[in-house]
Structure formats: structure tokens, C-alpha cells
Image (cartoon, rainbow, N blue to C red; front, side):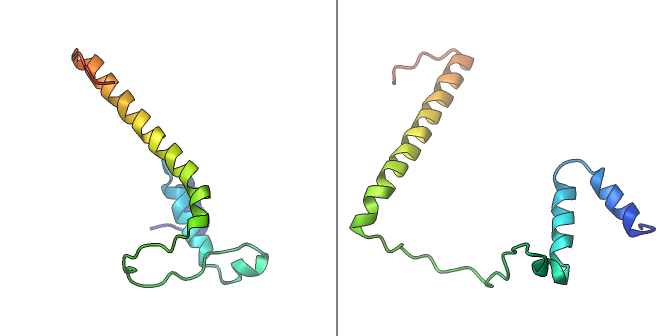
Amino acid sequence: MFKDLRHAVRTLLHAKGWTAVVVISLALMEIPAFESWGIATVGTFPAGIPWPALPNLHWHELDTLMPLSLACFLLAYNEGIAARSASCQKWGIVSMLL
């Protein structure tokens, strides 16, 4: 299909979207001496799907987790209210909720 490697790389670089980036990154990860150049890689992934389990949380960790979880909740709530308001305006619905 491709006459040489340069033609293949040139074709991938002219591809639209992130396809070229993904393909080139995967190809570079197959170079055996990649880690010897000082570039860190993830390594191998374990096979299979892990069993669902509850995390081990301790009471002293909650003071660091609660502010972030509250901020995420408020952000999601605000986004939901904004989406509801936008759809009510679009369709001309008068909403009595906050």
C-alpha cells in the first residue's frame, strides 16, 4: 500500500483528527530502545476486568475528600440547572423550579 516509511508517515500526518497522533504514538511505543532513551512508559496492563470493591477509606481522609466532592457536586448541579434553563428558554416553558 505504501511505497516506503516516509510516504506512510506523510500520509498519517495529513490525516484529519487525532488518528495520526494515536497511530504514531502506538508505533513509537513498539521501539524496543524507547525506555533506554529515558522516556517513561506505562508498561504492561493486567489482563481481565477487576472485581468491583469498595475502597478502603479512613476517617482522617474524609477532610481532604469532602471539599472536592462537594465542589464536583455543586458544579454538576449548576450545569444541570443551566441546561434546564436553556431548554426551557428554547421551548418557551415557564419553569417554577429554582
